[in-house]
Image 1: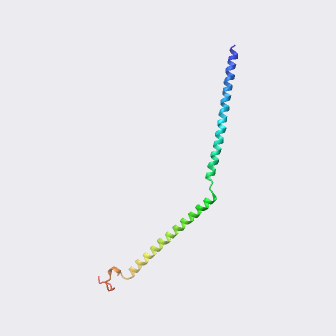
Image 2: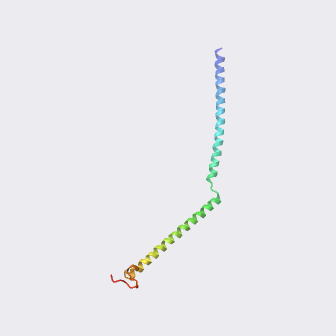
Image 3: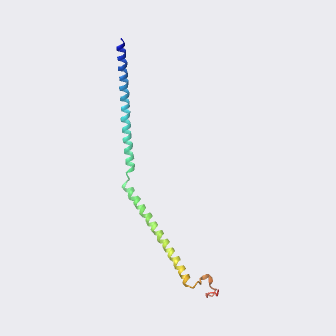
Length: 108
């Protein structure tokens, strides 16, 4: 009599184990499907739209044009400041502040 009860317990344990393995494998399949779907979404979001790329390139060109214009303006201001300084130096040190009202240099 001892043999049939032991055999029954082993069979029952094996069936429980098989059911557990089946349930785990089903969960694994679902998780793999979810992972594949999430990877697909990530891949789609990482791919840039050609129109968006063209728009970003246009914005980049506009920014570079603005920088170039600002640099040109700075260079023009430096050139005009250098011209004023050069004109003051060539006038013998007589600037507008060292002149009388009549326009002649003061004898300082």
